[in-house]
Image 1 (cartoon, protein in one colour):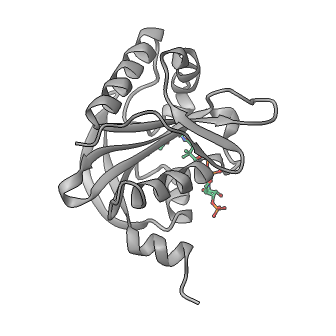
Image 2 (spheres, helix red, strand yellow):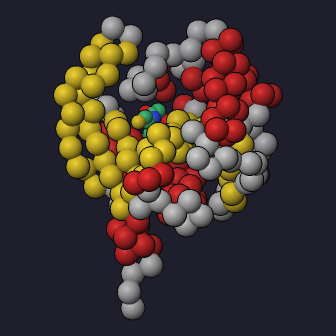
Image 3 (cartoon, helix red, strand yellow):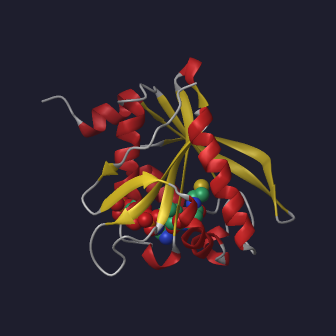
Amino acid sequence: MKIFTSFTLSTERLTLRFVEPGDAEALFRIMSVEETMRYFSSTPWQHMAQAVDNIEQTLKGYLDGAVLRLAMVPREGEHAGEVIGTVTLYAFDLRNHRCEIGYILGRPHWGQRYTQEALKALIAYAFGTLELQRLEADIHPDNIASERLLQSLHFQREGHLRERWFVGGEISDSIIYGLLRRDWEAATHPAQ
Ligand SMILES: CC(C)(COP(=O)(O)OP(=O)(O)OC[C@H]1O[C@@H](n2cnc3c(N)ncnc32)[C@H](O)[C@@H]1OP(=O)(O)O)[C@@H](O)C(=O)NCCC(=O)NCCS
């Protein structure tokens, strides 16, 4: 397993950095909102302790190479320096050169292509530095925003798995999207 030691990625508007213990309030603000958590793999957070615990798991994940989660921090404007969301690589299967990708953005920041911008950098890192061949995303069938986001990043819809999640008393199916390194390279560096 690769251990993740702190680094940053820069995009046009964002710095992507490792999550820190001091991010608990910012993450709680994002993950306690009903609308944001509607199609997520857990119910809205109700207690700050959940944020603290989640950050502890993330820090452990860096150390054992299980999770690479980066905070999205705008460099300029009204929200400069704030954590507005996170993008994550997890469920690594290095033998098969693949992992899953996840993302969440605070409600006030939706629709400004922040997540698309952050994921472009994370995907480039996954296929470049980490030498992965395949990324997978598992989304709720009704999560149109997530589906459009993945399509905008050249992910292809690959399957429909039935009754895969049980969250907040509701059973839901999964739509699986996949992105291959060669698809990404063809889309981002088309042959002349
Ligand atoms: C899904 C989510 C991360 C999208 O973030 P975002 O920063 O608002 O998305 P972007 O602005 O980068 O949009 C990327 C693409 O998706 C499209 N899109 C985003 N939200 C959309 C919506 N509600 N309806 C239709 N299209 C949408 C954009 O138009 C854009 O496509 P384009 O470049 O072809 O026009 C955000 O809505 C969110 O955090 N939702 C709650 C958490 C969640 O569901 N996470 C995913 C769990 S699998």
